[in-house]
Image (cartoon, rainbow over all chains, first blue to last red; front, side, top):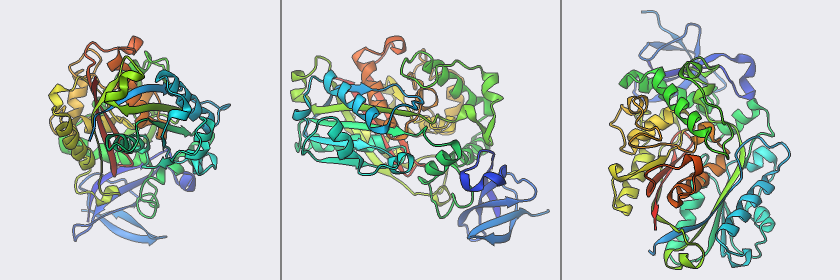
Length: 67
Length: 386
């Protein structure tokens, strides 16, 4: 799975205020479909490979895959 | 279909007005508009209201008759239109359709939003409800985040630079400083724009439109009756409303807005003109990247070159295609539901030659683009001197 696009959110909505800054990304799954999720740990850039770390409250959390 | 004209304009300043409520803003713009068109409230046959989130921002629902009563309307159909940031444009489109179809002769379109009574994190949350709440927004996206992701991909695919985004902000701030109705009348430098406080990387506060209160109104009538009301009718040469996929992650390519492309195609065809004929434009710069993408989707700049086109000064008031001479959403302000109607007011002021310090040398054929959400709704309008 790889990163299609990403951003680090500094100005968060009310529900996630205490988590900012955090990174979100649109990730392309192996079947070609896309999903918006959170990035845990190291920041990622477009085309970086990621893997699913966990799913929390229906939101996928990805981590950067070490090459 | 019969030709339709804009025969009256009304607008409040855009800004933060703690002492004003939503209804008083809408009523002020509506009254000004009726006065400008020399029309009595009793002559208006239908009321179209553009408003995104009155219920969430101020707790009031059922807004069209609520505001209509304040304007002195009695018994006429009064309807609120909601299409996120394209709410105003959508109300305008449906009002035009009804007059063009011959259902009514005189209709009032008003757009309004009262946003500044809520704190920023709550505003972000209300705005986010225009996105996919169960998907992207649950993951922590905000509207700046969605457009930041568009910017990142545009930079990756086409080499658009941070400076190109900043050039849009610098230009719109300079334009807004000449607009007495603008929320922010402050000239900024490229260095300032580049060093702004980060909101969602790579966007800073200078890439984001403002949270504003305000209202705008236009009065429509069949062109054949326009002379009864005004010596300066503005002809609606075309207006088209379209839609597209909802969430950003459901789009094949996020660096373009297919809804805008479709609406532009339809509008150019209806008006019998092409992008090269357009003399000036008001584009939906909710974020600087949105103006860049719009330049491409509307055919003003080649695909991927919207940033360069902006940096080269092509969209300055002195350039070949002045864009957002009003200051745009960036500096004029973005009271969401008022924005689409405000764009029609700004184009009409230019065409009537009443834009004061903002007046452009070529001002007979103008285009407005109003975008909803991250591109799921779009309205493109072309106006010309009648």
